[in-house]
Image (cartoon, rainbow, N blue to C red; front, side):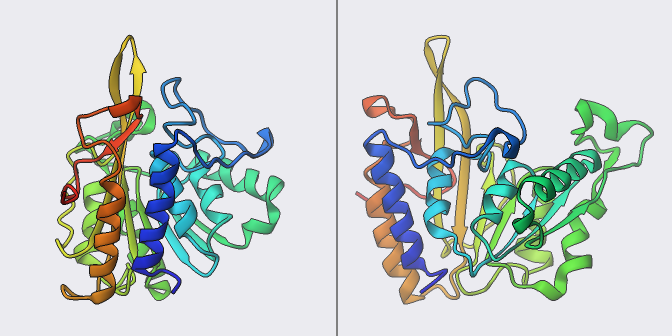
Length: 287
């Protein structure tokens, strides 16, 4: 079944087996299709490249095996991951706060990947200054109280409610707490009630995600060696929405997922020099 718990469990196992063997699945694309930059510690074995979604490599491999051309996706924050997702989804809706960046992405897609352009609905919704000049802080990435992202957060509900539900929702970019609240509370029909997938990047940060405990959960943390020590690069968390607490499909998949994740180093350990461990957002697998 497409978009099923068992499909997710299989994708997790494939990704784990690659990580255990020190191998990865990577999308390689021409330089003309690459967008964005990566710091040196975000190597291709740890994080997605400029041809891919900028998230933990292990999670990207899970999604690479899970996403399907029949699925419809939504994301807050556009970039290289948008092009990567468009190659895998039926249609993608994206919200981006940087208007110039959104225009660059749209132009690049039309020039380099015109066959994907019809699959993309992009809304550029800038920050609004409640206090003059606030949105310009931090190189246009301001999250201060005087920077108003109400329209950015709420655009999905005001523009695209008729497109609900989405099979895949990625929360990245600005005001992630508020975006999560949109998915989980304010717009409960946004995420498909039957096995919709919600992904939060940089989930090692203290974002509030009060996801129901019966949803499936996978969280991976990536490390890099810098100045002779292991440092956290990123954590990405995925939840699958289960229709009910006693959903049999989710119960079976939960056992399979925990069995697979139990093969990875536990959080705080780096057995065998692994650059991935279990993240902090999900219960540890039962042993």
